[in-house]
Image (tube, helix red, strand yellow):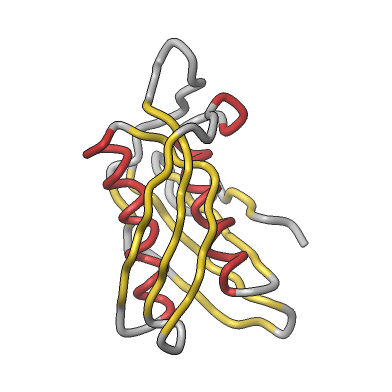
Length: 141
């Protein structure tokens, strides 16, 4: 199963993609990686620093949105690219505990692609498929 695929036909000037996972955890990891790849060449980021993230929401879809927003927030507030994720769900998939690793943004080292400002609700979707999970996400650049 592929991790994610970009869709340049949906929102010109934004970053639109589909993320996939056999499990909900895998989908969240892959959605996070795809969001980060919109921002930076993942191969240029080392897992030197760790952040622990705890989030809760009313639904799995809302939790995915909050997860991606947190990644963008940490990029802006703490000047860090995160590219290594471990996800755990609690409370019927309404709470998330994650460990995320990455490093301080360094324009001389990192192949920076774009500055993601926010996750949008435009066509935002998370659904359970016959085999696994799929999400559609558009990031505002």
